[in-house]
Length: 251
Image (tube, rainbow, N blue to C red; front, side, top):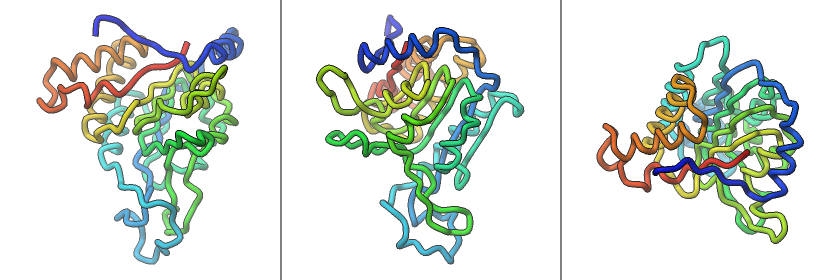
């Protein structure tokens, strides 16, 4: 914990980033958040008339991701943020060109990783609309590659989002690489299954460092992790399992 650590998927990603970021201006708005989507047919936010058999895999609701999102949003003036919760955290919202106007993008949901076929990996978003009609709610890797972002940082507050498939000569192929090719300067992602409540606390502390104390992403992550280790968080959360999964990748 004595040093700030930043990783890169491969040298080729560094070359692409240096070309993309050389003359890029700062995005005009601060933070866009997509969190707590309706990812399963048993979600209690769905109307009774919903045809639940039309849904895809039944993923559990990450209830604390909503608390996480609201706590982070409160750190930013309303005119500088976008908050998409529940049904609004949809594939349509995730692929909206307006996301290019934000410096920081935060996704708090399930990550779906396919080690064998990384192109099948993605992020789970809402699979129903408010009326109960089924939607395509999966942000696939190829969708991510086609985004046009100007984000200084994308945060994937989900499980195993930093992993992928290692391909000789190309490095690690996964969600992190996809967001970097889409224009993200850095990506904060996780190496293993993370605890919903502990992650919400870690992210709150991370964004306090980033937005209120004007720390760099690497310094804000290190500070938040040290606070979880030594601070006033729940005793169980002091164990590295609860905070060490998140790593920063980027320029």
